[in-house]
Each structure stands twice: as structure tokens, then as C-alpha cells.
Image (cartoon, rainbow, N blue to C red; front, side, top):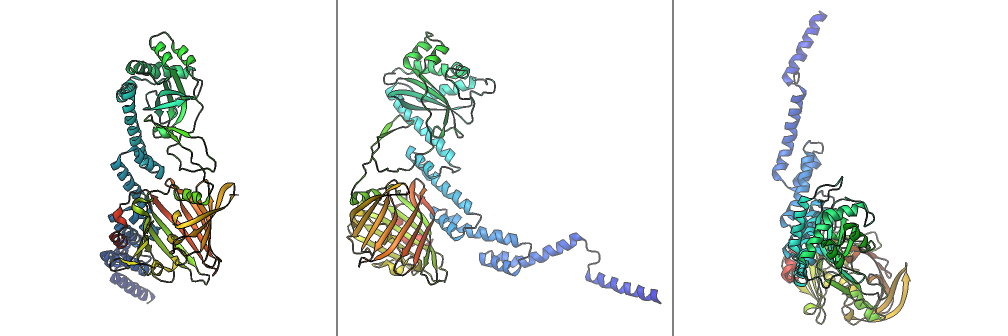
Length: 587
């Protein structure tokens, strides 16, 4: 009886399992069914292919196996419109809106690529030097260095052929042919160098210099007449001295020939580290070539190498010290020696403010900033701005032209009254404003403050900082030292009616010629606002890093943080017209 009941139960269970189709399913079958189920959940959102759809999918199905695909699609869709535009301001806006997007690195790379293409089109020594100042660590820096070095050599070639009768390009060809004949000496691969040339002035003597640029150290430092130097003389220097002696018919004006074996990771003269140097006078070279002087005697009679000097890839940004210094002479591979005249340090208020205004600002820039206004009541207002600015330096009567695009919403959802504004600061005609709403054409206004978002209402730099010296009367209050830095305190009283303050007192760093603090007084001469500025070295100029403004009368504070800045982009004048504002905001 019990056996019959057990058999019946087992039969029923077997039939139920077969009906459900799970008795004989393998792990692979179960995985396939799970995949199909998840795919069906994902398909309608995939067909929409929008950020909103993918976000809805992730909210409803966070454990779906296609969640990772949806997340990747979101970051790709966020980046795609900016990649299609492929503009510097577009990539900077993308970084502001999506700072955690993994394509931020690609955006930075694309900005550098846009820049190097522009400089390649210019193809000038000054252009490539500027690129290296702006992007010394860029992956395109190697390309810029190689082209810069070639342009320098070709510039020097014109000087050498005209003045000394030496065809520098033929000399370089001779070196390349020599390299093919050179054999390794022990572990030293003598032929593994790139030649470069320059004119050197040392202790009043001029030398035609040949650089042997190795990517790694091939010979240790040592005495100029030791065995390693004899090896170099026998294999490399000797045939080059013979060539120079025979192929430079006009040696008057130079004291001799010099060489160095140097190390540079990219074989670029600008960042080389000199390992060895040799200096030979014209007479010594002639005696050696005519076999009246042996190699040992030549090395022994060679001028002692100059003391080691620091070689840098790019020039440092100009900085003026408060004491006149002796003129500095700079020699480039083109052979031109340029003496920098020392800038006299002004000792009056107008002179100091003029010096601060004329510091290196760049011709133009694009700057991304975040703004935070804390009124002190807990309702903090925040917004981002993307600004394009052209420093006109008085050209066509303009001081500054700028566009500002407002990005994002404030913490409490308060949109800016305008989507963007334009400012033309004319030295004689005053300031002109345009504004651009979310829809429609740009309009003109006399009071731009009404069009600004809340985060900018208490402190608008165009009215407080970007002031031409002629707009105010200046008086030197005192000199002082802050943290070991010489500073000047200058009081400025407005001449222009549009400036909102009664007077301001600026503390100017006289090494960088930038204001570090500014105290503002209202029309009744009551302390009103205090500005603290932190500066950063960016692309060869001093740029804001952070600025904090305290309103001493109502207790509010405004903090401006510069998140990105790009300088000297050759922005066209059409970008700063009414139609340029419409394009800038409408992108």
C-alpha cells in the first residue's frame, strides 16, 4: 500500500516538472533563458537610444545584465554632440557639465590636437615655442619639438651661408653619412645621435656649435682629454673638424668650433643635459687638419668647457622684480642674440597700475568657472560660466571684448535671466552690453546686472576687476612686503560713472604684477567688499585659480573657482559680435 502511494506521488511530481520544463534544463539553458529575459527588458530602451531612456532603464532594472551597456551608452551620448562640434569651447563645456565622464581625458586630448593642428598650419618658430609653453607634457610636444628644431636649423642655415659661407644642410648631410660608417665602441653606440646646431657666445667669444643629441647616456662625464674624449675625437669630431675647416671659407667673426655630447629623451636641444663639451679655436683646428697638431695635443689645448648651465624646454613666463636687473642675452639656434632691456620699476600709483595692466595676459582666452554665492541664509546659489575673452590692448579703441555663457542651474532651480551676455569695453565710448535669452535674438541693454544669474549679482568682474587704468585716478599709498614678496598698495578712485564703488585699494604683487587683495569702499566711503585672489601659472600667463569676495555690509560671500583656462587661441573678431554671441549660446 505504502509503495503504491509513494509511486503515485513520484509520478505526479515527475509530470509537474515535465510540464514546467525544468527537470532536464542545464546551467547553459538557464543562462540562455536569463539572457533572453534581460534582453527583452533592455530592447525598448535600446531602440530609443537616449540618455533619458537609459536612465529610466537603470532605475527600473538595476540588476539587469545590460546595465553596464546602458551606462556606457549614457557616457557616449553625453560626449557625442561635443565630439561632433570638435571645438575647444565645446570640450570645455562638456567637462563642466560632465566632470566624472570617462571621456574627459579624450576631451583634453582633442583640445591639444586642435591646438597642434593650428600651430602646424602656422608652421613658425614662435608658434611651436608657444605650444610647448602651453602644453609641455602633451603627446604632441614631441612633434612640436622636432619641427621647431628643424625650423631653427633652417633659420641658422641662412645666417651661416650668408655670413660664413657654410651650407649647413650639406654639413648635416655629411654628418648623416658619417653616422652610417660609425661602429659601436664597446657598449657605446656612437652613431645613435641626432645633430643640431647653434651659435654660442662664451666669455665674449663666438663658437659655431654642433650638438650630438642622444636619447640616453652613452658616455660618462669626465676630463675633456680622457680616453672617452679621444674616442670621440678619433671617430666623430675629427672628420667634422676637417669638413668645417675645408667648407667654411669665411671664418672671420668666430673664435672656433665647439661640440657637445648631450642627453635628451626626445633629442631636442631645448631640454638637453650636456655630458661633455669640447671647444677648439680656429687656429687649433687648422693646425690639426694640416697634421701640425696631434689629437692628444688638440684635446690638451682645447679651451676648458664652460660651467654647466640649466637647459629648459620652454621659456618661463615673464616676471618682473622690483629692482632693475642687468640685460639678459638669449641665443637661439638661429644665431640671433637678443638683449632683454630691464624694465624700470615704477614708483608711483599710475605707473604701478599700468604695469599690472600690461602684464602678460595672452591675446585671448576661454575660461571655465564655477560660481557660488552664499547670502548667509542657507540658500546657496551656484552656476557655471564659460567665458571667451579677447584682450584688445587698445586696438581699434577697445580694452576688452568678452562673451559669457551661463551653464547649469542653481541649487534651487533658479535659471539665469539670460543664457549669455556680451561685453564690449571701449576706452572712449564706454561699455556696451548684449544679452541672449534661451530663445530669440540677442538684445542690447544698459544694465547688464538685471540679466545676470543670482550667483553673479553681488560681484561681476567687469565692474570690479577688469578695469583699464585710465578709468581711475591712482595714488601710491605705500610699499610693503608680504610673505617675502615686495608689494605696492595703490588707491584708485573711479572716473567712469558705471563703476559701482567709490574707491578701491589694491595690493599688487610686484614680482608677478598681479593684485592679491582689493578692498572696495562704497560711495559713502564705507568699507564694502574685500576680494582675495589666488593665482596659478597656466599656459605661460598668470591666471586666476580662485577668487573669494566678502561683502562686509551684509555678510554674504562669493567664491569664483577657475576649473579650466586656455590661452592664445587666435579667436577671430567675429566671435565677439552680436551674431557671435548667438552662435556661442546656441551651440
